[in-house]
Image (cartoon, rainbow, N blue to C red; front, side):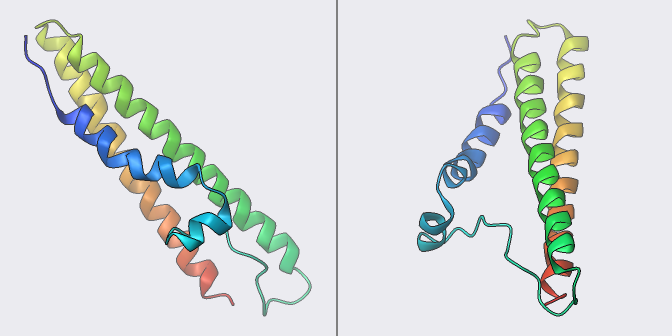
Length: 122
């Protein structure tokens, strides 16, 4: 039976993110994690509250998408582990793992781009 350590390594890499998500904003900032979605955006005029709400919704949707990608990574790793030597099932799990990792990278880049442009609005 062929056992892949990739799902275990990925889960261990994501463990600090899960620990940081369990903290409240002030504790996270004190420990070096800034998990807040920012405050009010200045310099835009009267639409400050609307734009701030839109940015919070976009960030929340990106976090939900990242959680879904992590779930797909776990499912793909599980499929690879229980393939039982079946090459088709193993390759299907491997392909799913690749797509989930690519999706997670795209989500992280989208989060970085959104936060970069919203920080320059100030």
